[in-house]
Every structure is written in C-alpha cells, then in structure tokens.
Image (cartoon, rainbow, N blue to C red; front, side, top):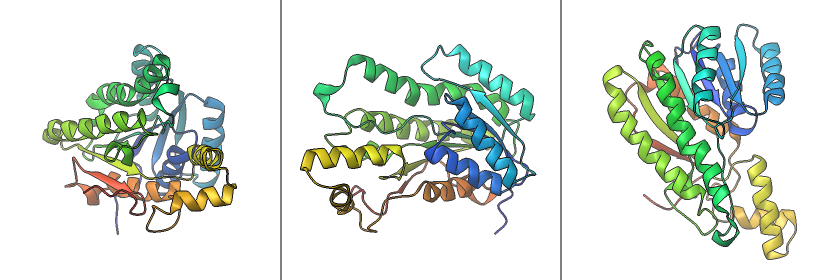
Length: 264
C-alpha cells in the first residue's frame, strides 16, 4: 500500500520516549523528516542519532520545548523547527501522559501542571503550526489522548478530564480545519508498555499486596486480547492516519486498547 509519506515532514511533541519515540521510529522508517520536541533534549538527541543511523535519508532536528513554560516559548520552538525543516505536513501532539492518583492526593499545582501540557499545550502547539499546515497538500493533526477520556475510573480523576477535553477539541478542530484539507484525529491508547505502565504495576502491587507478575495478570484481566499495548501498536495507526490513504478520516477517536474500553 502506497502511503505517500516519503519526504513528508512531521513535528512530534513528547518525542523523547515511549509512544512519541515509537512514532518517530515508524515515521523515519517511512522516509519522513522529523522535528522532535521534548523537555529532555539529551534523550531526544540520542533518539535522533539512533534514527539517523538506521534511516540515513531522514532529516532530523531536536527542539527543546516545555509546555509548563510561558506560551511564547511554543511559538519560538515552532519557528525554529520550521526554519530548519522548511515546512510541515503532520503534527503529532504526544506530550503528556496518564496521571494516576486519588483525588485527596492531588494538589492544585499538580492539576495546573497536568492541564498546562494537555490540553492547553496541545491547543497552543496546534494554533502555532496551523499557518504552515495550510500550505501542505496532506495536512494532518494527530492527538494522542487516552481511553479514560471515554471511560473514567477512580484513578483517572486527572487524566480522564484531560483526555475528554482532548477528544472534544479533536472533533471541533476537524470541523474547522476541513476547509483547508487538514484532517484531525485522536488515538486513544489503553494500558501501554511505557514508564507509566511500570508505575501502574507498582501501585497495584502495593494496593493488593501481590508480586509484579500477579499485579500484571490482575491488570490484564480486563483486556480481552490479554496483553499490554506496545508503543509500536500506537505508532502503526499514527502512520496510517498521517498517510494519503486516510484523507477522509477526520474527527475520529480510535481506541488502541486490546478491547479493554467497554463504552460504545
């Protein structure tokens, strides 16, 4: 299947590890050029060097970006990346992860920091890149959300509302951006094998008083496919949504969760 992604340019936030890094790997394998945005510049630079060694044709730049800093830094980061890359076709908003805690353990400062990254950082980033996306004939925005935005739980009292807002924003922007030929979609990962999964396993061990193996089995009982989602599972969908083949898919929020989410 011809995806028409070779020589396309993508900006990926939260690119230094986990899902963001997996998407960067998948895009580089398609011959795309990448601007990698992250707070952890050293880790991002190491990723960029690894990807360039595997995919020599891919051009890459690393741009420091922390959504907890003043919004003006987002504009500066985008301008820097566009100047070096020469344009933009795909934005992947991947910054921000799941936050697991009970309400009584969450401070106001934590609420504010989490929302600063997503949805506020996502909105600000998308707003800054819009003029450049309008110039592309294959403009794409892909938001990494989460299934708890559809199906809240007691431990997702922060990430649930954040991801619900992300899904609503995705739909609204798809309606607005359609006139420019830009699609906007969200990917909703379930429990994914990142550092957050390791934290979830640890918390489950402590709560149930069981081993890591038993905690993992307990968590996977609600996943029909019987395994944790891998970052590469998310990246595969991100490749398709970025492609020419997905030109009439917009305003959609697609679960990649092994069937865990029970909502329709």
